[in-house]
Length: 259
Image (cartoon, rainbow, N blue to C red; front, side, top):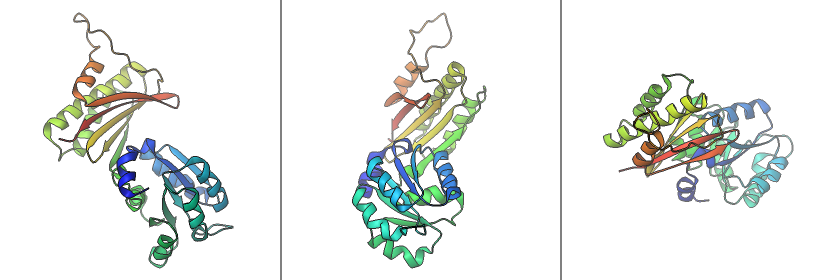
């Protein structure tokens, strides 16, 4: 997987398969938590190199995070085999060992980058994505919302702050779309929605997750009755939109092309 292919074709974090190989369960818990906060969901875990190789051959990961100092086979020793069983994966070493001393060796053996675990947690995911050349995915922002009447306003303000350098008409359209998506999630499902804003190279993608697996329905608009216009508005303002079942709930997504 070249960096150009990876960044352009993967789209959003929810589409990325990650394999984390680390013998420390506490470290795995922290890393998985940080990745989950950023919208990554398809994360497999292995506690040693041999288990990691078996998983890599079956899950076909896009991204492998590899510890070095593990019982049994050392991460450096397993790198060539890992590259062989997962040739399309970007392998990033995630280790407490010194990057300066080991970077050259891990690159020669098939890794694409090296991130030290000592990096502050708020920077860890971005450093991993940058090392893996998944820079589009580094521009993903997540907001967890309560099921209240103030949720749409919070979502609009959150999104507007992210898009301060974008075209003003794009910002206005995105704000309206965000408001509609969150309002629908709160009013029709009673969920505590999750908003994700993906600032991709050629488009802006907004996803709102809720706990109801049933897809939204476009109602016939009744002039005598308020409401019912949300999906028509979404369809008319966005360049693309859709819905997908996720676990026991769903996401509704919209995309606007960068102009």
